[in-house]
Amino acid sequence: MDCKNLPKIELHAHINGCLRRSTLHEFLQEDNKEYQIPAVIGIKEAFEIFSWVHSVMTTKARLQRVVEEILEDFENQNCLYIELRTTPKSTKFMSKQEYLSTIVSVFTSNSRKIKAKLLISINRSQSLEEAWENLHLAQTCEKCVGLDFSGNPMANKFNYYVEVFNEARKSGLKITVHTAEIEDEEDTVDILNFRPDRIGHCNYLSERCENLVKDLRIPMEICPSSNMATIGLGSMVDHHFGKFYGFDHPIAICTDDTLLFDTDISKEYELVANAYSLGDEDLKKIVKNSAEMAFSDEALEGLS
Ligand code: 5GP
Image 1 (cartoon, rainbow, N blue to C red):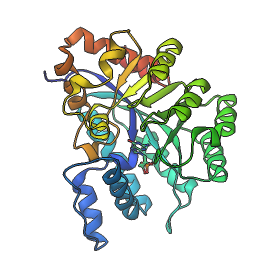
Image 2: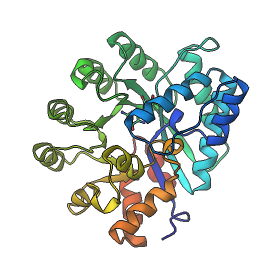
Image 3: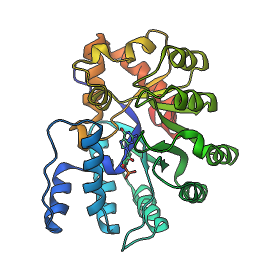
Image 4: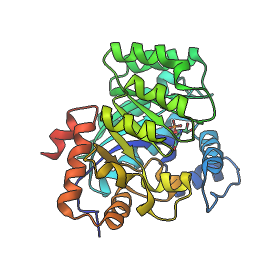
């Protein structure tokens, strides 16, 4: 099945995970750094790649180019609306505020059909002080519609930051949380009891957590290639998508990191369509669900 022509919505994509390979190589060369992306990617390799990417994403010009290219790439796959997420960074050449205003200026000057919104990530390795700083940046950032919680799942637990997320919710920001990327039932139960607006991945849900997700109907972002790499699945047929799709659970199909998994949003839809024998109408329904799960009404407006 070819899903390129299907109008789509992307809800889970990290800016520094979605650079073009060619752009990364160009930046590495310019900085005299030698690195080849490994062929097989698990969690360890993923975080190694991110540290290389971060080491070259130092200037406003590079960030601007990367965000422009991401919008172009997703639009070329007939994606009408995208929520891009990122952890604000300060470098020798820009403050966190400038990092965000560079992204916002690309979104604002974007004359493309694709509409873009921003989610600000709190990284599990950040201090509580940095998490509060991210919240304050999110509250004043024009294109930001929510917070994401991501980073190394072995680092801090969700509850360490719960007050930041409570405050975010009070101020009207939506919240999505990387959930159950490793087997950690306690952390997952805390996340689910907080009732985020969306949860990402859900690779290692215990039976108790699976039931909680179903009962609470928390919308789920599925990233097929990324999830298969993390869990070590040979086929999408064995993915937890099947369990939840059967219950008519709200699910969005997303890319996560196009650079790492050498993918695009059409390929991710194709993986699911082929594994579960989905037809056009089924796929359109998933896209509609995704638009309803989006943190801005612009997603649904784009589809109609
Ligand atoms: P950035 O926030 O720098 O734009 O995007 C890269 C960052 O996103 C990584 O350093 C990591 O913190 C986070 N990230 C990307 N993909 C994943 C993932 O699959 N799981 C988790 N937990 N974090 C991720």
